[in-house]
Image 1 (cartoon, helix red, strand yellow):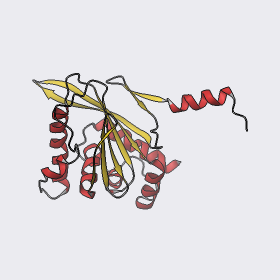
Image 2: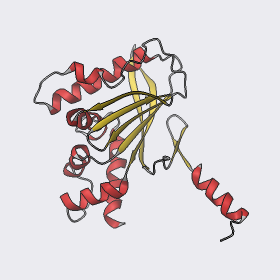
Image 3: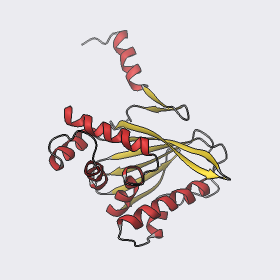
Image 4: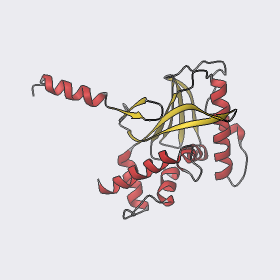
Amino acid sequence: MTTTSEDVIAKTEEEVAMEIEPQTGLSFPVKLDDGKQLTCLGLRKRSMLGIGIKIYGFGMYADNGKLKEVLKSKIGKAPEKPTEEMYQVAIDSDVEMTVRLVIVFFKVNMGMVRKNFDEGLGASIKKLDRGKKNDELATKVMGQASDDMKLPSGSVIEISRLPGHILETKVKGELMSRVESELLCRAYINMYLGDDPLDKEAKEKFGTSMLSLFES
């Protein structure tokens, strides 16, 4: 079968298809190299001196084929709108998911990211583990990355839930940690899809994406 120039152009366009996070203007690929598909975009803000500072934009990706199977087996028929049960299925499952974080704020180092991340993840772990604190588990995610590592605007951090309840962290393409823990995996996804999400609109968009899987 002969490959035409039109085929090459179409393939190239598919590979570089991007979606823009409107609050930051950041671009996110609609599909990762491993096939996981973009489900929602969001923004993480922190208040500093009463001002909301944009820290990073994020895109959530999922293995939609596996997520569809799990949803249909656990939920059955599609509900009229996203339900907390649906979100809980996504949190508790072992379906592969990746959250790609892209730094927005121009003066960020790993120490700042680690502190912000450990606080949020620590609270999520405590909520899921009957009020028990487990700071040691939360701090494993960023691994041995130096607190002095500079993360200029545009730097990418990818945190992925992999089969076998493994949470893998990459910073600027470099592997920082791989931690096997069902609680940690659930707590991480719970930060985005739980009852107190980092970005409520992003959670709602993820829910709409899950609903569409019932129809596909």
